Amino acid sequence: MQISTPNSSREVLLEREIAREFPDTKGRYGLFGGAYVPETLVPALDRLSAGIARWLHDVDFIAELNDQLATWVGRPTPLTYAPSLSRLWGAEVYLKREDLAHTGAHKINNAIGQVLLAKRLGAKRIVAETGAGQHGVASAAACSRLGLPCTVYMGAIDCERQAPNVGRMKLLGATVVPVTGGDQTLRAAIDEALRDWVADPTDTYYLLGSAVGPHPYPYLARELQSVIGRETRAQVIKQTGGLPDAVFACVGGGSNSIGMFYPFIADTDVKLIGVEAGGRGNALGDHSATLSLGTPGVLQGCYSMLLQDANGQIQETHSVSAGLDYPGVGPEHAFLQSVGRVTYEAVTDDDALKALSECCKAEGIIAAIETAHAFCGASRWAKTNPGSRIVICLSGRGDKDMPTLQKTLLKGML
Image (cartoon, rainbow, N blue to C red; front, side):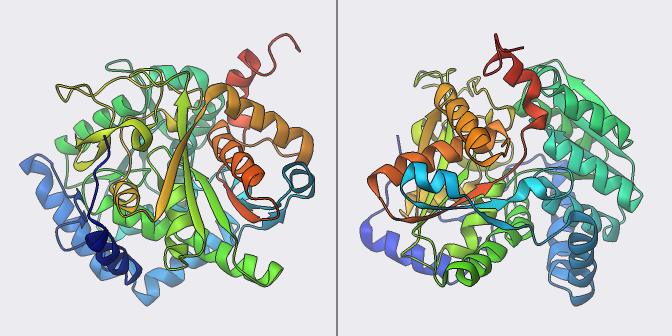
């Protein structure tokens, strides 16, 4: 079930989004968003909102953040023309190389910004959650860089399939806590991080890794990740003389995708396409395609699209990619779908792995399995739109996925 909006209302809401009026004062993106939290967390969220209002667009804060992004993260990341994929797909393909950012993914943009903000808020320790491990690594690195202790909660299943990132977090000085309750993946990790935060909301700062959760987190993640789309838009115009026909990004919680899409929202001739994890089928429990197959409800602090049964019980999910294995999605994505500005589709495990293999052999790039979903969606679109100009957010590198790839693509080859 999808929420529908009358055409006239859709047009008004889209105009307001283009005019940058979302979220509203209650943290709403149209019908979606808000803050559904225990009373004990309301003061912490209020402090965070006040801190964002005071510092996020402050000249000194921006200068410090930009210095860290330039000298430590390695921004701007390049926009790479992909000649072999272009020939194979019959399109003009460009890759936004977030895999070349420090720690190997887009997550570092959000992590370093939030830790800088946490220090200004007087936090004494950081807690974070992680699924694929990239946010955990980014949080550990940012905390090490800025001198704050870091605890990362990670589902036990994800600890196993993302073992290289567990080691990286520990090397960077973080305490990694495997979560053995619940579904033992990203949702369970977020639950545990929230419990830790509730226990000490004054001295602890929760560094949420995606564009999900209670307001103002979706807004904060979007603002910090929009550097991806701002750079991409300027780079593609410089390199090609114009805007792309379509922009693709994978969608789990939705931070790399909202960061890529947001600066293009006003460019209404540019198609924006998010690609979710279709897993192994359309039945509940077999996929993580929240926007494609979900229904509206409340999860972990906000109203958005969810994977739930007829009684509103959140269901376990499945994806070969740990970072997409989540039963919710950021509220701004749900809003952008409802007004028709962004299209969302799903790609199966098998097709994502095939796309990853194609990218490896064609371009010499091992993309993250999460990113491979976007590659698959882009290749499908190119076949029906020959000669188009396409940009894909290459959100992360795939070395973290070697344990999974050894059991799938590389099975029988080693």
